[in-house]
Image (cartoon, rainbow, N blue to C red; front, side, top):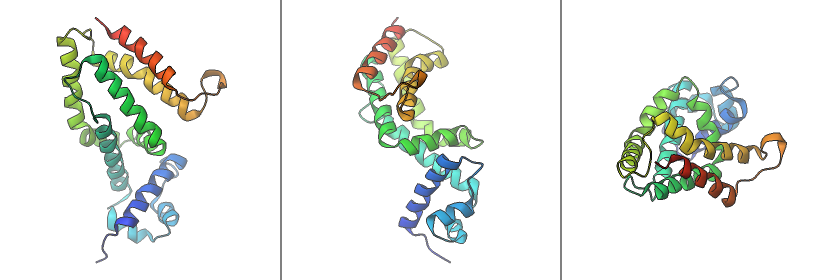
Length: 196
């Protein structure tokens, strides 16, 4: 029986992410991935049972890393404005440091594997964020809202700015790069909109 090689496994993950981002699921195959990694297809099956196993494991790994990063220096007990700012900072930082990983996670998240991946990766994060939301409402720092409305207002502007940044242009094709000024302006408007 052949053994696992950590460097090869890391290469497989890196190339799988690149392939999913460039070719989507339609163009992704184990054969293509093996060629890209300069290994045999049989070697891939040392690490993964099949293509769906590979995609699910990579998605879970990415999701876990992202959600862990969003919780860095964050606490559910933070005052709401400070906590939301920290969430924005952490999400921006991860997105700018790992644009391919974020693009891959978005593709996987909207695939048939998305629900399973979110269930495994999001559990601890979900509870902390629920506590943060509840504390902010209890402390009269946040108006009570359905969670979907809260999320749309709290994070929708951030993800629009990040999308403009990743595309390098805003509406109408105008060149765009995310700056602290854009971030601060948008966050101040969000905080104002969410105040009771």
